Length: 172
Image (cartoon, rainbow, N blue to C red):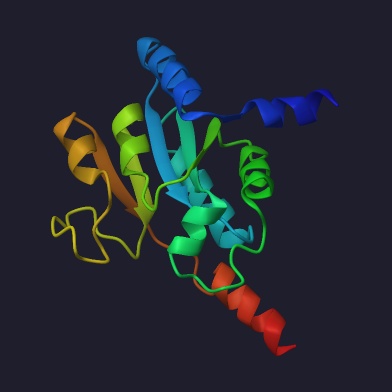
């Protein structure tokens, strides 16, 4: 049971995340932040998260709450897995230090509260995009850069997405 408790302790509120991140920054740790729905965990997610973690000492992952996923119009049947199950799976990865579930459509507020040293998104985004209306714009990037941080993108693992897995299951 000890290992399961360790996983559960990594899933925290925004306020607890702020306190932990502040502590880590005081210890000169580099904080990396990324976010997503992570609906059906697959090889692409795991590769992405481990690479994101390599940009610093502590990886904090924001998970869209169920209501947030619904508002993103990913499909009427999404999310497949509820928010606590998704958070638990992400927290179980050794590269993840903290998981925070957020209710908003974007993690903007969470990013501003945590002020990570590095913000990471997938290669379908552009770290240099400044047009907030663009699908390639990274929410929170202006805040991170303004506070001396970096914004990076990671190439996605080809052939892996929750949507393609769901579509494959439906066709069988």
